[in-house]
Length: 132
Image (tube, rainbow, N blue to C red):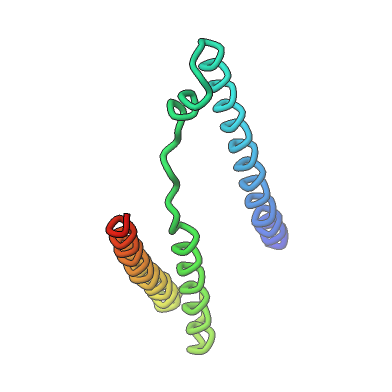
């Protein structure tokens, strides 16, 4: 039983480290591949700006950091509620229900904030276009 606990601890430390390293390696390879593609396009006689437009990537979700932050805060609040209620995590469905409710509340807060920010952006774009 002790070996199982040690194995779980080691794996819980190694798996995130490997995941982070592999993410960085994949990102570096992707950037290198995009650069090689742009160079190949330029060598075919197309100017650099057109090559950039041809290899343009879709923009990333700008609210993903906000969403993950709210989820983690919700998870922390759920865990805090579990501690305050004295719910043991082992074989207790109510423990997991409270955790899930905290995550759900984090997602709900994230949605409301994203909605308000998007609405504000549309309003700002409308006033900027009207002044032009």
